[in-house]
Image 1 (cartoon, rainbow, N blue to C red):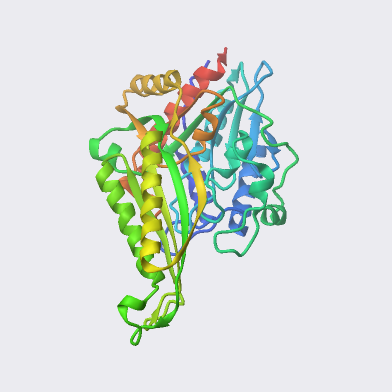
Image 2 (cartoon, rainbow, N blue to C red):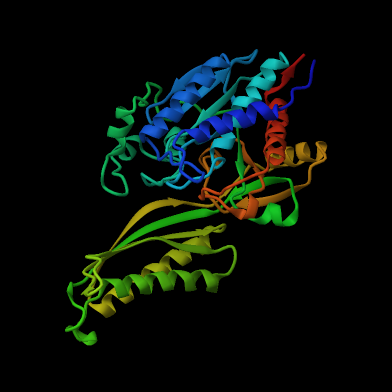
Length: 412
């Protein structure tokens, strides 16, 4: 039996082709979930699945996977990730995991290797949550953590569209029921999206789990008034309250220390005029931590600070939860397999948690799940200049292939 190996030219060709879909001037891509560019990317993915002889399945939330049969029936070993991006995304975030799955199957086909168990390659809907919140939506519905009807009714963050309508419009509301299949095991290859592996000169990250994520949207309502004639003591300035919340989020992260992080990603003032006291402000706060108790404590402190700031300024405050996922621990035995596969290839390896959310966390409660990380140059991600060296991409895909082959059981 010929040992299967990753083809660098094939892997890179698929990554470049997907990068052409929704390409941005100056580099990077924009394939927001359920946009026309996302539809084109899905069409290309389906074409590749069919060309490899896989049976294509699409479920009711638009998740797509191709199934390579095994000698035995049963749940597959699944490789998955996503092809949707943020508005200024890079070439590898999410897409690498899907393209590596395709290359893995082609490597097995080329080596004429059969497996005892089936193998599936999947792309999940709206992992990023950039256009529709929450993130990890497709995998969440797939694994029963999120409600299909509620997700279909989700309105876009800019208010312009409803998810279910867009899913229908692009033709990817499939017939397969939600939560219809849990794999034998789930694996995901991803760029680190952080600086640790590159800084330490390590080739492979064996990911031990994912931080808990809390997204909250605050809306503050004050009173619009003239910036020159309204005394400071008589203002109801929504912008001031928003600033207080942003500063509170930063202080919470600093006081808690690593790995607590806090980010204000959206901040909008209305009417947004230089000489008018803001009547309304909207901002989002992203809190993350590896421990549930600390994440909950940070959430409570943030809410108390927001309420106090609004009361002090005489403004009304509403808070809406956009997403909330608890910390996840990946299967230790599967993490061990990844580390062992890396060492067998003479690659340096580091066990590490993920600071970003991933589809793998939705599978972890229901089946063995784990992730493989490869370095991100400069730690950049969600950035058009995101980059990972070709040798690192291939190394990660090869480790993924070795682990999947071990789990699926090669048959001579």
